[in-house]
Image 1: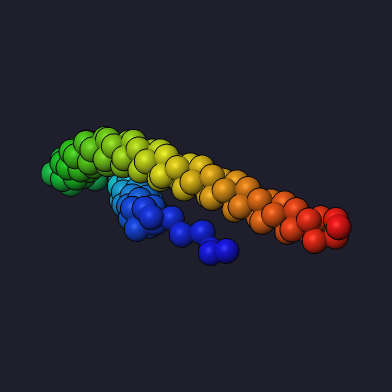
Image 2 (image 1 turned 180 degrees about the vertical axis):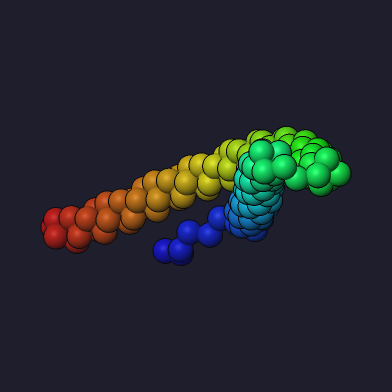
Length: 148
């Protein structure tokens, strides 16, 4: 009796490899998304700090030029936040696309693994049938030898 060998094992291995690669790509894109979200959060905190500084400066009698400079910096931070938010939206889109790709790869791998399992079950059944036939034949031979 031989061991089970699946004739399409290389395809199963390829599908598993593709799924693993899709997982890595998704993981990478999630990391990029998180980095962009963190940057937005940091920019918002910085903006809030400068807004408070502007408020304090306006109450302490600072020159108008300095207040305008602070306001320009706050406006600059607003534009940075806006640009980063666009980057976050793009990163979210990439993450979603990569999730869909991973889902497809997982489905594809599952189909091939199911086909392999089905083939293995057929192999086991055929081996059991062959073994049973051999046992039946041995019993028949013994019976024929013992009958005078």
